[in-house]
Length: 291
Image 1 (tube, helix red, strand yellow):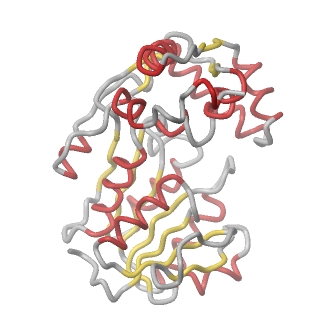
Image 2: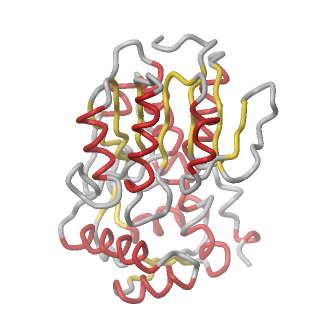
């Protein structure tokens, strides 16, 4: 392994879908870790050190970086996260921290917005780096995102039309991230991470119905309607417009219609299918839970 268990790995992103899962993988392998976020940690002190961390408050950065060997970077919800992330990375480099793993998106290349400038900076300046570029999370149907409208109305909406997505399990993303943080040889590359199959949202709705009996509908809406819905849910307007643009690209360009071997190549096991994910979460999809 790259890092000795006595040296801490810093996980930004607090209790996020991937940070929390990477934390459990590190704990299971006896690595020392520090979680960093604006909310208290759900892990006890014996499992992980936790510090208050805010990307926009650099007074919280030094404590987070103390005695750290590698960093998992989760961007804040901001149209220009590089304005706070790159100074933080510079500070980490000054502390002789060598390894960085960034959570990005399959839809965003190093030349794209949001995560792109940070991706490019790591590629140019970090001695050891990896960028995780996952497709859309399967957990969006259970832990947030579409899960809310599924519970409330038995439906979810996008402006992706009949565009397809290689939905991927957060467990698989996290397993790739774990290896990127701990493998002896640095990856020094991006990883486009998908599940084993590309599906449209209408096909997902049909699959949920087939496996659970729950009637689920995919509503196809316009980009403008999506921006309105996201901003009503508290997403800042510029970021909502960015997310709507991603849906547009899925619809028009097929930007997420891809399947890669990344999970198998990095972890040695096949990625979880959406069918298996739904089967394993059948209780969540029971009609009695939909109000």
